[in-house]
Each structure stands twice: as structure tokens, then as C-alpha cells.
Amino acid sequence: MRRTGRRVLVAATVVVVVVSVLPAGRARVKAAFVLAEALGVDVPRPLAPEVSRRRAEIGGTSGDLYLPGKPAPPIVLVPGAAPKGPDDERVVRLAFSLARAGRAVFVPELALARREFVTSDIDGLVTATRALDDDPRTAGPPVLLGFSYGGSFALVAAADPRLDGRLELVATFGAYFDLVGVAQAVTTGTSLVAGRELEWDAHPDATKVFREVIVGLAPSEVRRALRRALDGDVAEVDLPPEARSIYEFATNSDPARTFELASLLPDAMRTRLEEFSPSSVAGGVGAPVVALHSTDDPVVPYGEGVRLAEGIDGARLVTVSLFRHVDPDGGRLGAIPDFIRSWRFTSWIIAAQE
Image (cartoon, rainbow, N blue to C red; front, side):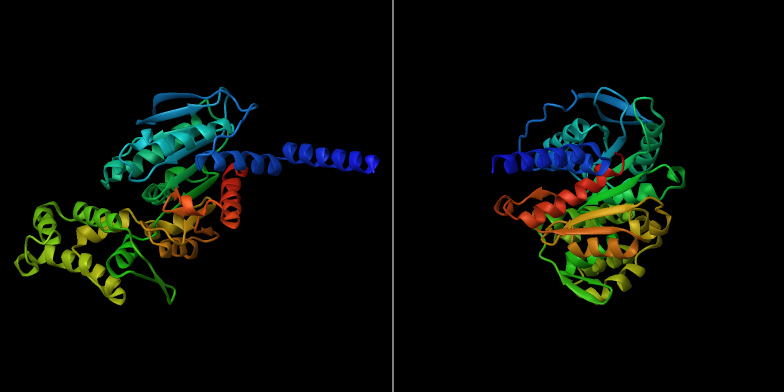
């Protein structure tokens, strides 16, 4: 029996060593640590490198750069509409964890943190990714990793011709695919995707953020009147025609009418909606795409994750209920299947550069 026990121990040790040596095995081990730390669990990592965090300007874009001490595969980590931007504690925790997994991580400072949609953010992601790819502190093609609206911005950036052939992977968590699709779910509680009705229970903040975005994308001359109408201070009939079409789009309650109403918006606004919708450039994303989305996401409808998977050729979607948008749901941390799915998603990100 003792001999059998020793054989089992030796066999188990060999398996652990082999798993740790092979690239796929290393990726899974590193992914487990990254995911655990991202969920707020402190885990000992005695073999991890010392990581430095510093302010940097990469390709003209300011942000925080995390370095593991030697040239490493680069990740551009794109936060969503988090007011603290690169200083958001969740972003900092994840960036340190990825850097301890042997990655050079750049977290850009974007106007998106202030819930502003500006094309300079997209351009900044493109130029920063190119510059990071050429930086002597990095080794190998970059990964774009975006959260919430930042994931959508990352997809739009990935379709830019300046990044052709440069990206290893694009990974998104809780991203939208089409801003008109977001409007459909926010205003009606339903996403219509490929003939399916996907019900959605929005967080009150989702409506607030959506309306801020819509007002920000509207022509400047009608923004004040539109905002007052959405706040209930001005009647729809008193709005100028341009603002009226936007108001009707933003307050529509019939999901079957959403895309029709979008076609009636002012030309400039339709253009703006397309500029920030990955759906408009899906054919230009040349890198592999992986996406994680929670069925219970109260901020970005799960239907957008389904749209993304169906709209980008070869995209892989992992569905969980472990998170409330991009934050872990404390009441569900025992959901082992969801943890395993999240681990698989994280493993894809790490394995792409291992």
C-alpha cells in the first residue's frame, strides 16, 4: 500500500510538473491566479516577478504602465465608464495580477471614464497599441482586453487598418455590439436577436448612462432641449424636429420599432452611433475575439453578447451568471460551473501570448 501511495504521489507530481512546463498548462495555472485575484482573493504567488507601476505616455496616449521587470507580451487593458479610470481599484488589481503573470500591461486614460464618447479615445487605443507593439519593453503581439463599454471601444479599435496583423487577440467582458441594440433593451426591456426575444432587467443606472450617451451623441444645438425633455421639464411637442426624433428613439417602448426609429435620426447622429458600434466594423476585426457576458448583466444587456458572437466571424462567447455586469456577485461565488467558465475565458487570454 505504501508503494502504491508513493507511485500515486510521484505520478501526481509528474502531472503537475508537466502541466506547469507546457504552454497550455502554464496558461491555465496563471489564469487561475489572475482570476482569483480579480475576484478579490489574495493568493500567494512566490514565483511571480516584482511589478512596477508608473505613469507613461504610449503612442501619445497617457495612462499607467505595469512592467514585470523584463520584456513581456503586452496587454492594453481598456476600462469602461469607471469614474476613476486607471485608478479604479478593480482595474489596478487586475493590471497588477496580469503583470505578475508575465505581461506588460498598459491602462490608457480615456474620456470614456467621464461617460463621454469621443473618437479620440478610439484613435488613442490604436496608436497606443501600435506603440506598445514596437516598445523594447514588450515582446510579441498585443492583446486588447476591454471591459463594459471599453470592450466595445477595443473592438472598434481592433478593426482599424493600422492594427492589421498586429493583434494576437481581442477579449471583451460585458461589452455591447450595437448601440442601437443597447437602446432597444434599455428602452423596452427586450433584445431582439436573430428572431429571439431576450428579456432584460436593467439597473436604474443603465438608463441614466444610456441617456447621457444619447444626449452626448446628439447634435450640439439640440442637446439642452433634449436633456430637459428626457428629464420631464419640456414636453415632446415643444421640441424642434431633430430633437423630437431623438426623444422618440430614446423613449420608445416597442422593441420591434427600435431600428426603424434609429433610421429616422439625424444623419450626424446615425453616423455617431455607427462610429462607436462594433457592429459597423465587425468585418474588419482580423484578430480572434473572445467574449464573456453575464446573463444577469444589469448594465449592458446580455443580448449584446449574443449579437457580438453572431456578428463577428469565429467569435467565442462564454456565458456566466457569476457577475453583476463586471463585478462578482457576492451571493454566487460558490457557483463552481461559472467560475470554471470564467477561468476558461481567462485562460484564452493568457494562452494567446504564452
